[in-house]
Image 1 (tube, helix red, strand yellow):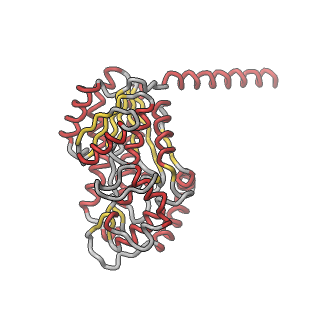
Image 2: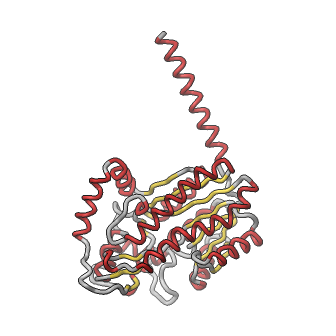
Image 3: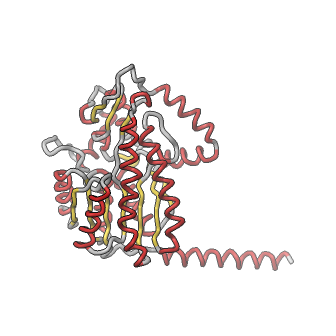
Length: 346
């Protein structure tokens, strides 16, 4: 009897493994000739994703708000042998998103992969945040991805083929002090993304939710800082640069594209992010207490209103410095600097 049970268990296990392999094969996407649209693709992670998709012989389109940045991004990709369609688009404008999707489809064909990557960040104590800060974050991280998704879905469903990759954040799983508008909007994106995955799977459209931790993209230059803005910029830029806390953005881009090809449901990037998500999932009270301690270590608002300053205008003794060297190099390499700013060696 024991032997029969063991053999039956072995047969069930083998069948499960075979089924899993068959599902993986069925979900695998060959990117050769596929049309990919990356929002927020002119710099940082978005630019690296466009490059990585191009390396897999996809037809790449990218959109962003700044025309000059888009021109530099197109040159960056061309220098790597990747011809990209670059279109100016503010993802918070639904009409503009719809027009951009139509233009991509007219020039490159039906969109096979949509990557919702456009993002904004405002850093500072909650007392310095305004309703407008929350509205901007939600418009960019929730409504923007929703507009783009609704624009590409009819074609994807008709063809029973498509991938949607939503670049959320570990801040969409564990809310971080001094980043409340950002975290709230990323939580909204995670909820949208996970629900869409469940509903669209039967239509052949696979949605992947990506929750990166800190990455070295040079993005603090474009974030906005409130309260003691130089101190806020310093801790944020240093955290975003240090090995161990932050992840190499090129490695992140490769992993995201791999997850897209496999049709994975979720990817959490970096060991600290994985640890934070795991602990919070099991012991949310503990993470809340630890984050409250972290909040005490962050700069106080000091009664300084609600005005903000860009990271590029918030230099201090601590940042830029040797502590932010990796992030500064990433900023130089990934199109985060203005046309006339000095670029460091990569």
